[in-house]
Picture 1: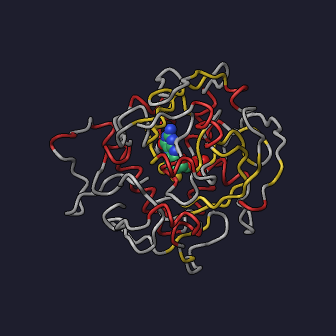
Picture 2: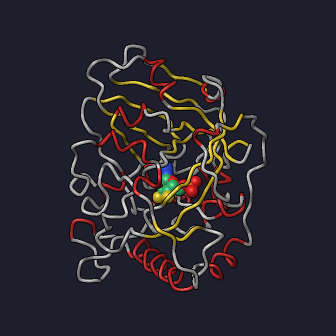
Picture 3: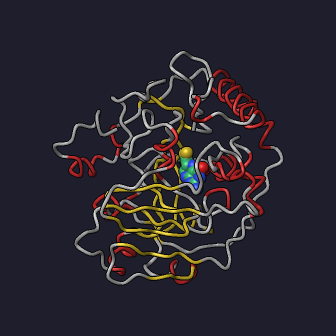
Length: 325
Ligand code: MTE
């Protein structure tokens, strides 16, 4: 995600959010790297920074491919998908999560599902992973920053879990609350976002079969930097909706606040559907660079409405998607 640039083009913070010098300098450094990224396709900078990448030990995870939900495109390499990450709890540079997330302890781990439900529960991660048959689904992931990947995720439709807790008639939204433990996560001491990182969906979006409760990728458990031990993946929305390392899921009457919307409400809305026709206030969303494939001298590829997942259009019938960005 990009740090907020003010309408006047300067990085001066609003008085309500004056940041300490160290954080501010880190932002400047980050912006410089993003700029460099945009200029040279990121290739050189990324290569240099990802040299030291450390992988979580691979634990195999058997799952049958669901062809109905799988993109037939070239998959991004595991190395790219596990070293070019956004996971601010472990640092704002793309290479930092792979190096820093080694400190994340993913066992024991429980997830609590509560709120507007008849049967709230707290479930151990290993039981959660067995609640429904695991499937492999190859999804495109489009980041709001203008890059994309194609990743074979492992998980099952979140609807399986939601049905288990029996939503009450009042449940209209769902909120994902993620871990924010300063002992394990060096980034949560920074004020770059309000912690914990929270995300949300309307309940019908969460019940859509494409919304994947995800425990693995590339036939193995999620590397820590990709959101171990459990995250969601919502392929028709910008990547930041896909909350990592979830500890709590709440069903709610009202629309929850979300991390990026709190941080910059004019830039990041609640819906955040991939939409090439609605620009981010500071850049176009009409095209994207596929990580590992599209170099600087190549034309960027066109971004598709709903990231190509046109089945979801019926969720938004009658809504103005410019207002509900
Ligand atoms: N979840 C948490 N807890 N913290 C984060 O910083 N970043 C989001 C999302 N989920 C983020 C998060 C963003 S901006 C993106 S693009 C995706 O994770 C990136 O997922 P990936 O690194 O597995 O590709």
